[in-house]
Image (cartoon, rainbow, N blue to C red; front, side):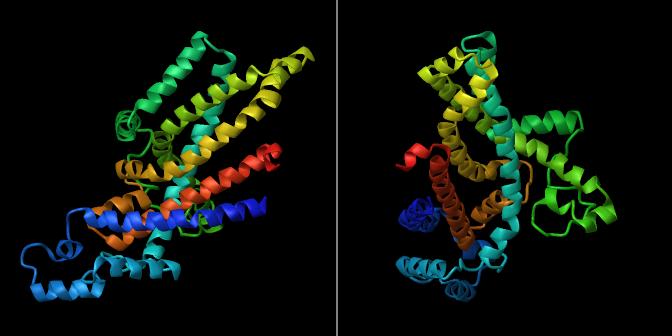
Length: 339
């Protein structure tokens, strides 16, 4: 199994190189000059402009710029942000825990609700409950994230005052950056001794709305995929045999049907976990969540080439890594695929 995983990872190298080409050249097709944006289009001294361009390496031919970039990537460096002057790797990893924490919570929300709802819809096929659940999932899938996020803010934050509008935690708390995950860092001995449990609950309250907004579409997909996969398995001979043996309906559904229906569900969950990170761009912008999505949007506005290239390369690499993990997970779930 390890050999299979390593082969899979090696086969992904050309994909990652291709992504680096696309991210490098596409961003340069977008109108706008990062040096002019930094200096201001009015009153920019030509000498200063050219000096800055030389310092950033933007005066070189485009193929030389790409070669220098690729050399940096293979050396484990992604350059400095044009705006902040900090290493892109450092900036990425300072924000990535916020996005990952939000993505995990969104996926947990989608899986915990999506699989049971899909199973219930399959067992109650063509019943009113089935129509309600699948109609609800279709509605959830059809709603754009930004619209759904604004509706959630309007109802639960503005009207009811239950949840905060934005941010990761209330500004009165100074949380040490131990892991970058506030749900963990707020439970550190230092925070508990000084602030008590209040920062932890504040972090949870700030996570609720963005997690629901980001997890709604995955929830709908998981529910529909679970229903479809369960219906296919429930029609198999071994399910009829299990029922003929007198097993309880719950055991037939959970122990026999759901286990065999998990492979396509795991596939879709793995693919969605990759896409949910990219989907964080909209959610983080709406909820002012300080993750890589909000960071990338600001970088695109400023034409911060190193940040955009590095951020996209990190995200793409993460998605292909998750896909490789999912492929390997097939072998764990279904040992017959190892042959």
